[in-house]
Amino acid sequence: MNAQFPEEQSETGEFARQEDEFRDWISADGSTGFPAVGGRYHLYVSLACPWASRTVIVRELMGLQEAISMSVIDPIRDERGWAFRHGPGYTIDPVNGFEFLSEAYVQSNPSFKGRVTVPVLWDKDLNRIVNNSEDDICRMFCEGFGALTSSEVELFPPDIEDEQAALSEMIYEKVNNGVYKAGFATCQDSYNKAFEELFSALDVLDDRLGANRFLFGDRIVESDWRLFCTLVRFDAVYHGHFKCNLRRIFDYRNLHRYLTELYHRPGIAETVNIDHIKRHYYFTHDDINPSQIVPLGPELEFMK
Image (cartoon, rainbow, N blue to C red; front, side):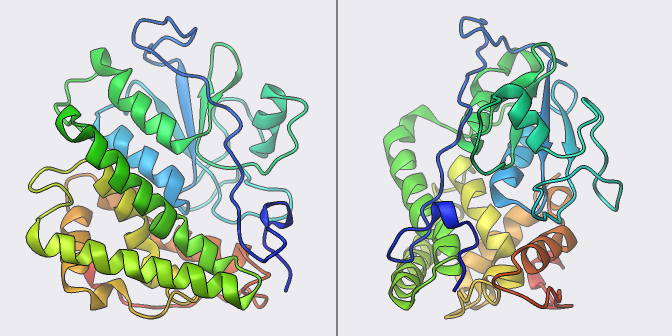
């Protein structure tokens, strides 16, 4: 079987995601060389991508829509990578006039040879990428831009810092990246391992949510949105396309209740585009879906 990303595939058939290339930091006081100034930064995203979608959600929750501009890329990614085109829910590049996101990577680092990914946080003053790590971007939106927002949302409460970090790491390894490790596996043993770890983790999380409204009681933290970005895509793409088909999220009483409640929080449904999600996965991953046929279903109860 051909690997979706050969450079990120181990000899034993496991998907090993590349490290993020750009990790500069925006600070409230400007001590890092990147001050938190309104209007200076632009966020490039795909609404198909769970990693990028988390930054879109955090930007929304923190009330940074005016301070940080944003544009959405075409969900169809071909051999040239993410592209800027006119279409339903996506546009050409309003900042630099790039045709492809790869141009931003090469302009920022001419020797860059890795895979071009979203999200990308762009510095309009220095004309370069600041950061392409969704974890960093979410943290910076919460901690660096406080003076530019009146939001009282606290996504990283200090009193649960260690427990939250541990839970977020588990969610990332077993669930967020777990679906990719199952879907991009090129041998049976690698798929089996990722599959079993994924559903063991979902069982643990479903049990946890049987006793809690959200992951940490009645408050919603960044870990919840981290999990949400995988759950909201699960039944539409991961269950079939990535062969994560032991159960649907709809079959989990607590996880489905939780997903539904988060989806209907103010401003969140607008960050979810199921059409972009399905077209991206089923059309772009032609090693997994050679026909590139995009399914019409399923009906998603959490959206009702």
